[in-house]
Structure formats: C-alpha cells, structure tokens
Image (cartoon, rainbow, N blue to C red):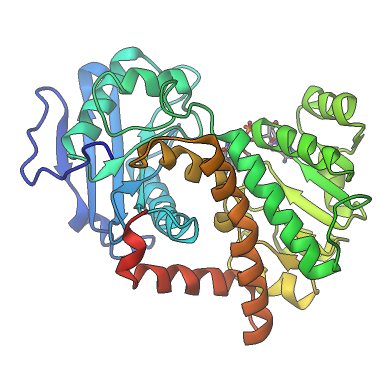
Length: 372
Ligand code: NAD
C-alpha cells in the first residue's frame, strides 16, 4: 500500500490558505459529527474550496471533488457535508477500508478552470496529509485530476490511477439490477426483462450496453436527444421523451441522470417493480423510500448500487496493486450486498434504504472492516 500515513502537523503550502471551519460547520443542518471541515483559498489561482472529512473509522476519507457554480460558500459547505457523509456509507457498504470525504470547489466548470486552480487544489489536498483522498466528480475531469496530481499523492481517478470510473459503476449497477430482479420477480436472468433507463450519459449508456448484452429490452430517455438516439442506434432501445420515462411500463426503472428522480409526483406514476440505477440521491426525501415500499416497488439504495466506480478506483491503493479480476469480483459483489439488504428489509418489515443505513453503521462499529 502506498504511504498514506497521516502527518499530524502537515506543512501548509505557501500560497493556499487553509482554515479549519469545523466549528462553523456545526451549525449547518447537514453536519453529522464530521471530523474536520476546512476552507482552502488561493486567490491568485482562483481557488475557493471546502473539504469535508466525515469519518475515518475504516480508513482515509475518500470522495471526489465537485466543481459547481454555488451561489454561496454556505451552499458549497452543505453540499460537501452531505456528500462526504454519503461517502462514509458508500465505502462501508462497498467493503473497502476507507472513510468518507468530499471537496466542493466554488466555480463554473465551463469557464472557471485553469491549471493553476487544480494545482492549488492539489496542494490543499496534500496539506491534509493523507486524511483525505480526492478524485473526480461532477464538473471535474480526468485532465483536471492529472493537474492536481502534480501536487498531491492523495488522489485517484487520474490517467495513471483508474481514470474514468463509469465502466465499473455500470458493472456494479448491472449486478444490482440482477439481484433486485431475482428478489422481486424471481428471475435468474434478465433476458426479456424490460428496463426504462433515465439518462444515457457515461454510466447510463454503458449500462444499456450491458443490459442489452443480457437480453433485456430497453426504453431510454435523455434531455440530449443525441444521447438517447445513440443508445437507440447501438442497443435497439426505444427512445422516450424525458418527462414520459416515469410512465413507461417496465420491470425496472433505472435512474442514471441527476438526483431526486423519485418525488411526490413521480412515485405515483411509476409502473415498475424495481427502481435501481446509478444516480446519486435518487429519493428527493428519505420518506420517498417508504412511499416506494408502500407501492410494492423494490428500491436499490443508491449508494449501495452505484459504488462500483469508487470500489474499482480504491483498488489502485490495494497492497498487491490493481488487478482487473479483483475489480470485477468486488463490483460483482454489489449484487450480494443488495440481496442481503433486500432479505433483511423483508424480514424486518422496513425499507431497503433503512437497512442499508443500518448495515453501514454496523460496519463502522466493526474495526476489522478497516483493512483489505
Ligand atoms: P453524465 O453527465 O455523463 O450523464 C448524465 C446524463 O443524464 C446526460 O446524458 C444528461 O443529458 C442526462 N440527463 C440529465 N437530466 C436528465 C433528465 N431529466 N432526463 C433524462 N436525462 C437527463 O453522468 P454520469 O457520470 O453518467 O452519472 C450519472 C449519474 O450517476 C449521476 O447522478 C452521478 O452522480 C451518478 N454516479 C456516477 C458515477 C460514475 O462513475 N460516473 C458513479 C456513481 C454515481
């Protein structure tokens, strides 16, 4: 394993000012006992970022770096707190010895990027001494991470370390859909199963390919007509207008676009037996998980089913080095984790989301989980 030792008194970089704002973050509704929250600022480089470290019980805090035109620092802080907490649970459910963290850079990814900015961000990550390991997220590319990697060792998703995680995410989602279809519909094969995929981007398109390879029948929507047409041309999918995807009669609805696909309106419109896809934060509110259960729709908790990319990237830090075989078996294991969640939810008469949270907490309480 590469050196990820924590330096207790990390040297501050010359030109990035790092301020501990943990005390300030405590007043934010999304604060959940976070270990440490910092602001990293380098005016000359145009950097203004928040890094939130939620929990390191199982290992260094891992989580991507998001760049977004936040309206205020408070908004970025709330996002970083919420997302870093989610990463703690994603790592625990994914069975990797890491904790949860996240970085939010304030800025417009279309106009605000520069080499100086990402190098300054890399110096900020380095100054945290290995407590936090970064990677790409919304608004940030592999090229951006390559620039940050000039300044920090604590980084994944660079060209040399994993690159684009979406192929692995799609693999994990496929394993999750197979587990859900077996549990809810009693089928061992996806042949003939109908899947409505919302969003044919990096993950959605690759998922469509894997589903088609298993003989599933696809309906696809995307706000980019070209993206939907590409999936139709490649995999024989039927294209559907974005708003109409919720009304498609299908065995599975796979949200692979943005968050909050399941809300008060859509939950009543769905005509599927399973909701299982890659998007983060699929439920607008936690209560929508109960609403799905009340309608006998099986929901695969998002942070459990979409962990494949994160799992594969962390394997670049495995003591024996990255191996595609291990990445394949670890992402396939997402199916087993979901089967356990579904069975326990049935036994305990509650929603899969509640059980996923419970399993996450149990794993955090078991120190043996903190190693490969
Ligand atoms: P992406 O930006 O490549 O693709 C998203 C697609 O959704 C785009 O084609 C976009 O046009 C489309 N879209 C947006 N709003 C839509 C709507 N209302 N209806 C239909 N289509 C819409 O993103 P991605 O990397 O494929 O990620 C998809 C989702 O999965 C995101 O929620 C992301 O956070 C999550 N996720 C991705 C990964 C990964 O490895 N990329 C890992 C975990 C979670």
